[in-house]
Length: 347
Image (cartoon, rainbow, N blue to C red; front, side, top):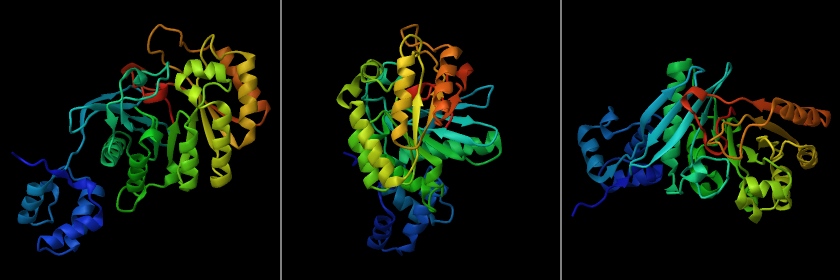
């Protein structure tokens, strides 16, 4: 019976060095291979052209590289690119490249499916199959960086964890992926260009603050009234707004990092004065900005995009209270570039 080979990217650099020493080679070979795996994004051992053939054969005998494969790529007329990404076990997740005039943003997935039950979200209708490994998250970013260079002439500039899954329910792997993305041995991207978007899990927000993470935080809020929010996101009954607020106060006290609220206005759900007033009040405890997001309906059900008049009412109220607000228009409509929790969005 053939023994299943371990994915070599599960090894640290020190473990790779130790492997080579244990096999009668020099430790520096581990550094060489590590660079190929992460900085150069090698898909196979044969890609490692400055490594001896006998060494590559030894690696192939002992390990695999479970690299992702972009199964299907769709390009929108507005420059948005949607990837259907096949994992080594045949499961599929999505990632999206979102361009603007000044930058390109990768919207990446952290789980196959999602264990939360947000009623407006297409991903929530999929059973959570498993968490993504750090290398699978990293590979999505590498693929989009290549597409950014190919189609837009410059490297990827920003990353948002807003694809399939709840990032804070795969916290350790997300953090490991971000460590690789920001490392000089990986992509060397500034953590300030990375945003992790959560549906709002208070204890994990506090953990991020305690871990002194350097990336940005976005919260899918959608209502500052518990009764309405729990209809939109039923799981939030376990995380009432007072607990979320306390966690975000803790976050800001520890990090001094401004909070972003992602907020969709839906017709006959939160397009009323009480909802506007509640959001304004909720925003005042810490510096923040609000992204009002255009919604792409996933069916003909109760969640439908609110009128421009309703959106403008939110904008007027927020601006009157000196709260930064931006409207994020849907991208990639002609390819249905749905991006996780909130259909489509720019970072």
